[in-house]
Image 1 (cartoon, rainbow, N blue to C red):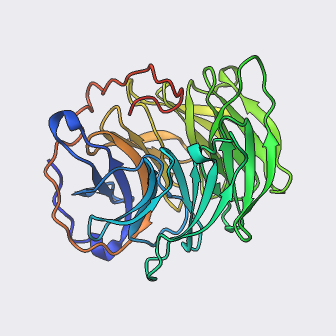
Image 2 (cartoon, rainbow, N blue to C red; image 1 turned 180 degrees about the vertical axis):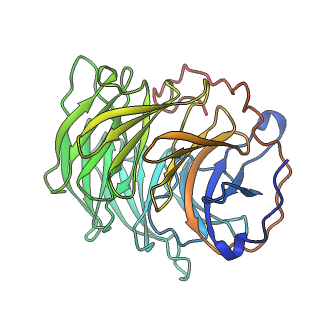
Length: 369
């Protein structure tokens, strides 16, 4: 059962929002679990119209709307009302979003249409969710993620079928560079997820093929990116690197390695893998979010119906917090959310033994979640 809704929530305003996919086999729908990032108390678990796997989470913390991509559209869910308050049709079954740091625009990579969208995201204007501009990427690029510099000037996409990493300026909205990644072996790399450092110097890119690899790209000059390192399992990288997060000071990179049930730690100054965090079997880590101080990283574990709280820089699991079934993403926000009725749902139902996922996913990345 969920913890009581804390009266301090509206006053404090700081929370980590966990998007839970629910469990259709037992009739449990999507929900959002709100966690106090300091006390680690579960503030509430609230009903939600849907779940988001990779939401726009890194910038513009002061907001009520959680944005993300779903099948055929980009959506915004309101913490205040629990409703879907914005919908943008994209014609792509996979969409990857990020907010500009000022919260003005949402940038979306529509994978299966080879397009990028610049969407008005300001909630105080009538045109919220209007597509402002569209960029046609090159045919067959398959842009498969979206990450943005802290100054909001440039965004990056790994192009899964094109084997490139592309750079887009936000104003004007256009592609300004594409870096081909060297193919080592017979199979294409399939770069598919990426995270740029808040310092603006390094871009981490996860490559899907084989057991997976990690490209490290110097983007200090966004118009001329250069790959400076590539990590494989022989370098200490876990199997199936799915996505990554970089600490707010840019010092540490954390790669979520799904099939390894582990986090690989990258020292961004040394550009080297220096450790790992072992998680329970069947954890299947899917994403994560740092709090602004960088002292904690929250990692959803859909295989455990829980969130691992990892302390930084020691990189130890400080706590395991039971949440709703199949937590898929985490986002730090600061919002004055009025009291809403919480849900009474099983918390951490798979915590002890794990939730088994089908490993035979044809997409060779997320697997079945």
